[in-house]
Every structure is written in C-alpha cells, then in structure tokens.
Length: 220
Image (tube, rainbow, N blue to C red; front, side, top):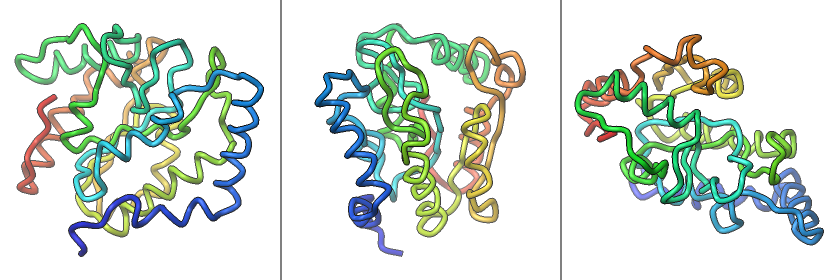
C-alpha cells in the first residue's frame, strides 16, 4: 500500500467525467443568477482536505449541508466557528454526554477537531441552496460520494462507518463489510432521535473498534 496516497491521486480524474462536469456547469449557472449556495465554494471539498485518505478512521455521513446563513462549513453536521449547534448536532452532543465520560457540550458547533483526528465528516450531497434543503439532490454528488466509499474499500481497511438515518444507510450497499465496520441508527434530527440514535453509543463503540486494531481513538 502506498502510504502517501492522497485524495488528489485517486479523485483527480473525476473532473474529466461528464457527471462531474455537469455538477459544476449547473453550479456556475446558479452562481451567475445570484443564487446563494452553501457551503462557500472554497469549502465544498473541505471534508477531504481536512481528513487525508490514509488518515481516515471513521466516516460520518450527513445528508446535505445546512441551508441557513453562516452555518455550513463543508463538514457534515458541523457549523462555522462561533455558531451555536443546530438541533441535530445538539442531539449528537447529548448522546456524547451519555456515552463518553467527562464530555461537556461545547457552545460552538465546529467539528474540525474531529476531522483533523481522522473522522471524515462527509455529506452525501456537497452543496445546497439557501433555504432549500435537499435542493441539489440527484445532481450527481451522490455518484461522487459513492466513489469515495469505493476508494476506501480498495485502499483502506478497518474504517468504522456511522450510518445515521435513511440517506446515510443508502451507502451501506457499497461498503465492503468484510473490510470495514458499520454502525447504524436513526438520524439525530429531533424528528427521529428517539428511534434509535439516543442510546446507540456509537462514539465509545467506535473507539473500542479503533483500539482493538491498535489505532489511536478519537478524542470526542
């Protein structure tokens, strides 16, 4: 295995493919019309920049970015520094309080520290329009994020995939369960958090699986 393999090495050819060109053709047209799109253009691929391919320990899938002003930062469930945690993230913090001893709920919802430790915070759809949740579904992002999973299947082993909710669980069919671990629950949204997310203990379970492999656990 090439220990210095990067996301750029394995994804650079995507920009030559029609589906990827169509995504950015569409985005550029929307930008020209003055449509506000989240996250900022420079942060669309931030999840990949912060968590190197060979450093991925855990993958947490979100649906699409937050669609309100000054929230989306390019990482699933995370918000810009200084922004109070939205309801889903607040429920994630509540579960962490139950699951991880001494965890204290932060006043800020920025999760870049998790990303820097090897938690790939990846939305299944990487852009959204202001005030319009799921507005960029079926644009082609799902193909791109599927390819990221397939790359992890080929080049990595022992990653823990946390699949919360229906959209995240759609990725299960392409995850090689002979190479990786899958933990599933309901989404942490207020509408479904009591259907399995609360009490799932995915954070301590993930750290147990990492330690079992001799890998440094995550400081949540």
